[in-house]
Length: 78
Image 1 (cartoon, helix red, strand yellow):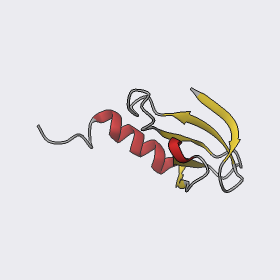
Image 2: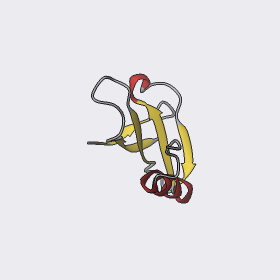
Image 3: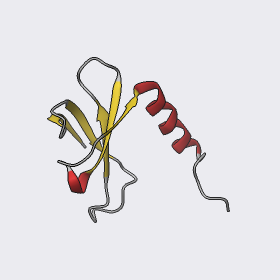
């Protein structure tokens, strides 16, 4: 679910997306999305505190992180 062009606490517009892996609707969600300022960055925030802190990552780093998640690179050992 995207919330396009909603500004962050820093005033930057971000096309927010709630993570599909962030719980079951209990409020424990992470939102991430591209910053729409042309600087090739992604923003991440806690959806319970939308006016709080925002982390920014270079787009290439964010893409690599998500690829690692999908590949199971961060899964706990069995």
